[in-house]
Length: 404
Image 1 (cartoon, rainbow, N blue to C red):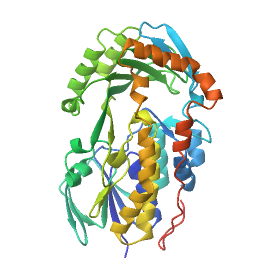
Image 2: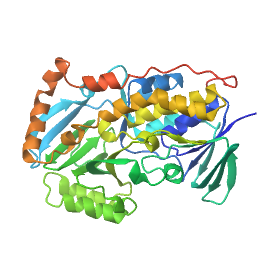
Image 3: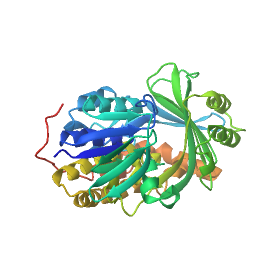
Image 4: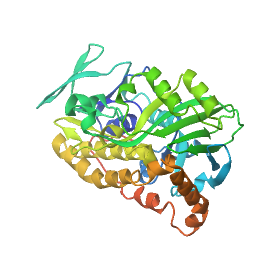
């Protein structure tokens, strides 16, 4: 009998999981609160073990075709004076086909891989879950009900599935002391495949030109003692918070604030991790940011999501016992997740927005000697090791169908 799975979330982990589950013979439904798969978005990285996942999907050439080939990152003082420029392709252990691409290109690749093999329910979400020995009864926000053999939450840092099954986010949410706002705006500086960052104590403004000659990504990040949970669902409050922090900013900051106030693609969030003692309960499991968000400071969120989706689907295919499958998934992924989350701890936030002028000066000195450290193998080596620290297992299942 064909097993059924409901996946909540259609960003990266969700579609990747849906692809592999279908390939192993599951009947899969993906529910997504947005009206369609989101295009656009800021650049993301696919590195190390995650590249092997893409290869096994037969989509590596499509991935590489979307590579942004970014040039340099220039760091400025808060008054706009240049500090140093670094080649982005030399940072973070960028080798072996590591790929930076628009988020929308990655979600598009996953959609292409799935084709019409999976049912998508857009504009809907899970309202209630009731776990039984024989399945999970789901009531959707739109009013429909259905039963599935397993349900997987792939719905991000602020996961609705996690809240319904495991409880409030606050118990798993580990705030790393920073907030950020991202948006697109006109490319006033004529930047071309490069980034520019201006840092003042406790805050950094970044313009990142990722291929569109007319538009750039603007990022405003800043330190804050406590996470502004009240602003998560209030765009007006988000805009006011960011504007107040950067009110006296120099360089391009005033123009960035003006653009942020009217941007229709504003994305505001905290720099945080999700850490959970267990990633499953009953017939419900979590994958990607919903289970183990590493934060953008690690640069590994998309990669961990792809790897986690591959492993979870494979373990579910290998046995009809969901409990054994979920346990094996956690056992295989735990150390890989811990190592990648550790990349964001002990320096990531300091590099983004040092809290003091002395901290900014020290960060700038480090960046000045970074080219030498790269040549000596003393810069980026940790990422290079961690990103490939998990070797993908080979999974087979009697119901497996051929690759698309």
